Image (cartoon, rainbow, N blue to C red; front, side, top):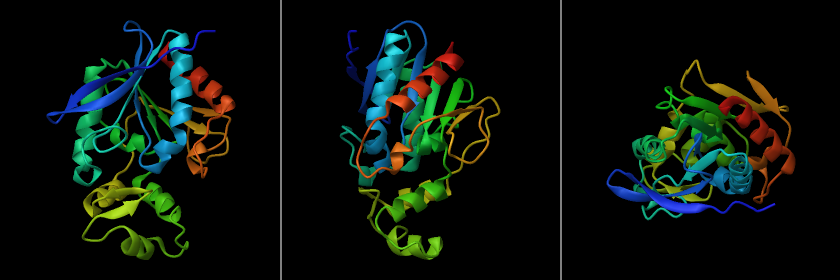
Length: 231
């Protein structure tokens, strides 16, 4: 079987060109992927790419944008603001003419402008919980979250969060962000996760692994669920 090749192009957001990777045809369903944030994106990038390839072979196009300051973006992350990321998601959806959206983990904090589209959320996580996980990944002890976070992240200057240099303003914005109440959104969770869900998939929580990796099991489960709802 021929492996679909990606297409790299750029979308415009806030007066700057931002990279985006696409698989699949120009016609038919167009799926925008809102990526996980910070180190969780690195750990799940292979999974997302694998899902995009399989969807492409099924006739569904998918598009994975770099948010300002991430990936191959020429914007410095220390200059990125939460509002910039929110604008970028909307701009990317417009640029790829998205008919559906697949938001992953922290990406679900940025999908509140997607209520008019088919919205699928995978393992949505509140901002405070995401920050807690990233702070803990720096090998800090699991004491009181608020005091640990104040010491490690929410200072007056740039800090390192999940391996990324960001401003305290961005860290606070992520911490305070919640999952928007969009009644039409579909939620997918792992079988091992707590929380309400419209569907559950089997596979490992790759965002918790120390090194980036994929999972054939999770790729197949996510692809099946997306195809079921997109069709």
